[in-house]
Image (tube, rainbow, N blue to C red):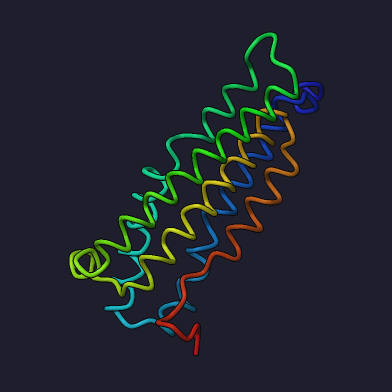
Length: 172
């Protein structure tokens, strides 16, 4: 039984499970603090910003993190080929970012009214979404390379520092 817990599969799985639980529990732990500083309408803005992020990650990301993770397992795949593939993923991400920024520059007023967020939050949304996609790409590479410790530490660290801002001024 002791050998089962020492196996890399079980120990790696435990790291991923614990990291996911810790990362997901941080927003719940912060809830009492956020309720003190955010009004109900600001919660709505935070929810809309999170929905915007989810949409932007899906549209801009084009599943590059998943594709890079899958590419790792291709047979006859050298490290140099994987590097080139990841570079191509980042180029695709750059192009999709440019397209999104162009569309936002053209339609920013109508999108702002439709979504109910200030224009500046739409631009911040693109920046944050692109950052999240790059983070997903890094996490997927750690995961396929069985670097559970780095994956878990970064995921928990990331979860601890992604706090929604209050208006334009931060927490007051």
